[in-house]
Length: 309
View 1 (tube, rainbow, N blue to C red):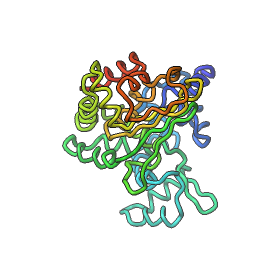
View 2 (view 1 turned 120 degrees about the vertical axis):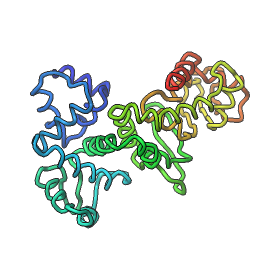
View 3 (view 1 turned 180 degrees about the vertical axis):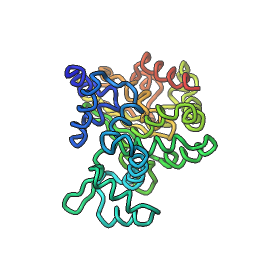
View 4 (view 1 turned 135 degrees about the vertical axis):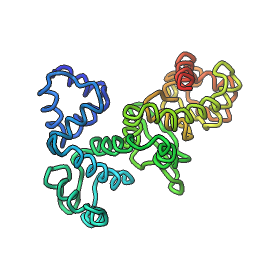
């Protein structure tokens, strides 16, 4: 088991186990759960429900779900999970039975207090509680739900450089979630917990939009047009090594990458000797654009999108 856990920390897979192992506050909780069963629990729902039962006991699972889901609603619009005392107490005091839920969170260690700030013991676990409750909604409520959660972001962009992958956005525009790792976690949780409705009311629409933007994967004209629309910009050094990649993230591509289904930056060659010292922009010729693309990786990227339709 120890060797397997080391592999999870190195490979970050399964992602839902890695996320709680990577948190100092839930490391021992996760290890105790895994060691008790002596098997790797390869099911998101089962594993996180076991973690919840360790926090509140099996007889208080519903209370744990409700209170930690409310906590997720409170911090998910922030960039970090730190909440001022007045913000937390004011939020729960406005809810029917909110004070009891707040007291439960504190008494069971699900919400900690330090130097004027409250912090959830586990962000992934709180997000799981939120996704678990929302997944139980009626199907006809899901379309507006997923639009509200994941339909606000516009004018986001992707930055890649060796050893670093990040996001950019214009402050004047809205974001789904300011913390993009949390956004990715929540999307992947819905993909697992609410597979049918998530696909029907969100993912299928995103895949269709992305497929239309891509056009014919075998068409040089369509490929060039797609990359120009994204304002793809690739910079190489004097040795021809790719040192930076930039492109816009329309909602469909953002969802695709945040779900971990694929990434456009993986389709860009990391070495292009004939473009040494160049910065290739969206205004480049089709030939220069083609010279940047790994054809096999791009084909796989497009096939994954098509497979979602």
